[in-house]
Length: 198
Length: 198
DNA sequence: GGGAGAAAATGACTGTGGTCAAGTTTTAGC
DNA sequence: GCTAAAACTTGACCACAGTCATTTTCTCCC
Image (cartoon, rainbow over all chains, first blue to last red; front, top):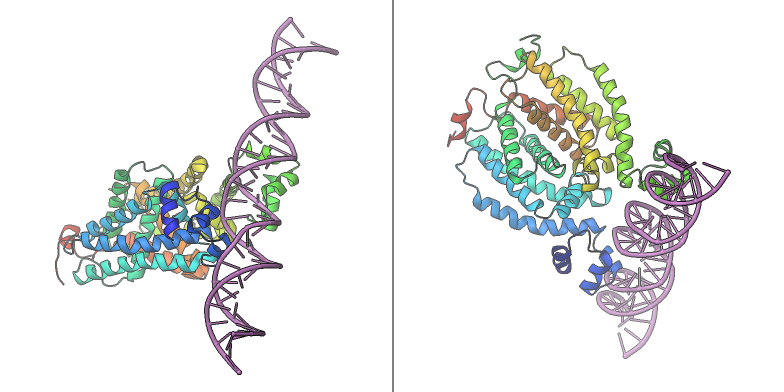
C-alpha cells in the first residue's frame, strides 16, 4: 500500500504497472495478487483509507444549522473534488465503484455504503429538524442524491460540464429540484398526473 | 460491425478478442483500429445502432396520456432491460458511457444525448399538460432522471438490488420523490431551510 | 497503359494484467 | 530437534489490447 500510494501519486495509476509496483514494494508480483483480487482493487483499498480522512474533514466543515441543500452541496462537492483531483485515478475508481466486477463487489459496496451512511445521517438530522418529509425511506433518498452526484461526475467526464463551478451549479439546481419537487407546487400529485391540458 | 454483432452475441464481449474479430471479419487487426479508436468504441457503435431500434420501440409503447411518473418508469425500465440483457456487455458499455476516456468522449456523448433528448421531449409534453413546473430547466431535469437511472443500475451491479422487480420498485420510489419533492409539502422552501427544531 | 503519389490495410511486435506450478517459510506435534 | 503439513511467495508464462513500419491498393494525370 505504501509503495502504491507513492507510485500512483508520482506516475499516476494507469502508468504504474503491477510489476513495477511489486518491485518497488520489494515483493513478487504474485504476492500482490494474493492480497488484492485485481489491480483495481488496490485502488479501492487506497480509496478506503483516504475516505476515512475525507469524511472526517467533511464532518468538521459541516455546519449543523445550515439548510439541507447547503449541507448536501458541501458533501457532494467535497467528494467531487477528491475523486477528480486526478482524472485517470477518478475515472478508474468510479468505474469500479459504480459498475463493479463480481471480483470487486465486496470492496465496492463497503465504500459506497460509507457514502450512503453519511447521507442517511444528514437526512435523519434533517427529518428531526422538520426540513424533510417524515414519510420517506432515507436509504432511497440517499440513493437519489448519490444518483445526482453520479450524474454530475458523468457530465464532467463527458466534458458536458467543464469546470468545478459548472458542476456546483448543476448540483445546486438538481438538489433544489429534488427538495422542492418537479410537479407544479400548488397542485397535489394525483391531480397533476391525469391532467390532460394546460 | 456484422462480425462484431455475431461474435459478441455468441461468445460475449470480453471473451471476443480483437484478433478473433478481425479474422471473422476477414480483415487485419490494424484495419479495425483505423475505424475504431478502441475495442470499447466498437461496443459504443453497436449500441448506437441498437438504440435507434430500442427508442422506436419505447415510443410505440408510450401512452401519451399516461402520468409522467409512469412514462418515465417505462422508459427507464426499457433501457435497463436492454443494457442488462447481458451483464458483462452492460457493464463495459455503462463504464464507457458514464465515465468515458478522452478517446471515446465523442461517441459517448452522442449516445447519451439521445437519451437526454428523449427525456426532454417527454418533459416538454409534461409541461404542456401542466404535469410539470414551468420554471425548471428541462435539461437539468433530464440529468436528474438520468442520475436516478444510473443509481438504479449501479445498485443492480453492486448486488444491492437483486431482481428487475427490485429495480423497478426503487425507481418508482425515487421518481415519486423527485416529482413531489423531499421537503415537507405544506411548508414553503425558505421556511423549511432555516427551521431548527421539530 | 503506365507511373507517381496518396490512401488504406496489415500482422509482427510491445507492454500489460493476471495465473499457477514450483519453491520457500512457518507452524505444530511428537 | 526433527518432520510433515499448511501457508505463503514467486517469477516465468499466457492472452490480450493497441502500435506502427512496411506492403498493398487505389486514384488520377499524361
